[in-house]
Image (spheres, rainbow, N blue to C red):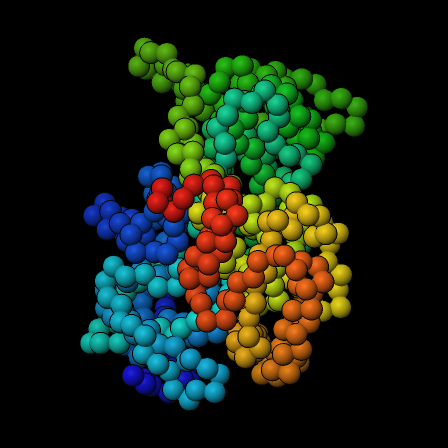
Length: 468
């Protein structure tokens, strides 16, 4: 049935506050995230991870007649309905003057879940309807990704240094930022939270840019790691804040603190968050502490860790980045810009597949890796109709405030689709093809999985969806 006109209703949802959930509300919200969302990783999220996910959610009110978001907006969050009713509508083609009604969502339902994985334009318009304002819980993509990343560190006892110290990226836009190193033989979450709370006591933010830079070194189990971290802290003049439970690494840190700086080095500034309190507790309780770290990672299932690893890989190998990583991929998606490669890649990554994708750009030679037969065996070529590509690109351009663009024009889209077919014929005539014109992300993922099964590669991804 046709709904109201496609023009955007006035007013948007209003952010109320970051939530302080009661135990009952937390249990209800956790159940919604696990059962109603299309984001599969939420279903197997460990309890500590779910608690952290809930801690960062915010309350949003949407008055009747106001929109939560409009079709074509760039998505950055998922929402759960707490109270009230939402109407979901969709403009089927760019020429439609009216939206088409899709669904009504009540308490406990989820909307906008794809935005947790990528910043694609919204595919529907969502508005509050009924007799009362809609009250929602909001989960931002930034918070979601931060929580998932914090849970994804392996808890192995490898004797080698587990940190890529030279790959840490400095804070952009603030050359004089003061470094603070967070060092822990656990996840480092408690230490990081304590430092962030302490930093709030200082007025050290100008126009959104902080005058400090936090670097976290988690699961530090080797004495060589401690030595290297301290060397770098002296060189950079960093403050080291640490929570080290294991005696052997704590003793090395304490020894490093006492050492006199070498020529050209600064004295090592360090704060032990735990030791003073633990010493007092031992005296009070007349008991000895355990050297073991209560690590959340040990309670995370192997399939979950593999899924987090797959998502991390897929993000690093998105949009043609780092073709040198393609040898690690389970699957490589090829296709034109805005043909749906990123959402499909991340959807498959939730099932444990490491997915790279590469945008075919007319007139640009592909990376030499694509000529490798072992790489081509992992490739799947995406096809899309010119009309569908035109509509998708138009929505993207509108999100950036542009109404006219040669990039999105039907003439250019038709030209690129024809070039794409020539490209596939020249560079990968045996590469299987999937038409994504009319399918949603889930339907297109099923098409890809069928090809993987036919090739006998279905077990290359960590596990089947049934594990989720």
